[in-house]
Length: 126
Image 1 (cartoon, one colour):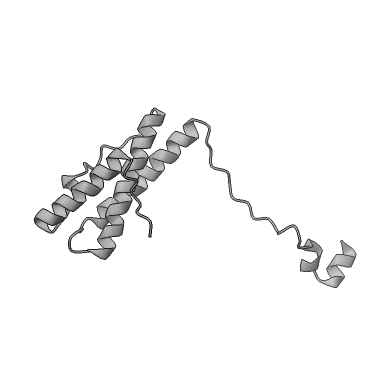
Image 2 (tube, one colour):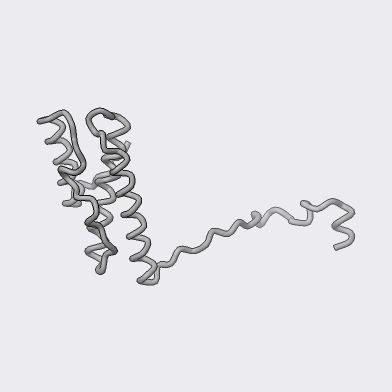
């Protein structure tokens, strides 16, 4: 399985290192020792966006580890909520700068003739 942390990403690698150090020293990793909740905001620049994406990766890693080492990573709910906030802030940035989400539309595959979805009688009247 691929690691969610790109070691070339300084913030992500620092987060992973901090998790490992705390785990090795204390056997427990408290999120508040590494991350301060309530400090996230909509990025104003692309570099701030990349930083927020890195924070999202670190929070995702914490959640992932909390499922495997529940007693050692006890702040899963906090990490998950902060990760969700990161996602919303990233979306807000993208919407402000023209990367709007496209609504998902369901289309029938092109090879399906929609007339076959109707009964014979209905097709004759259409």
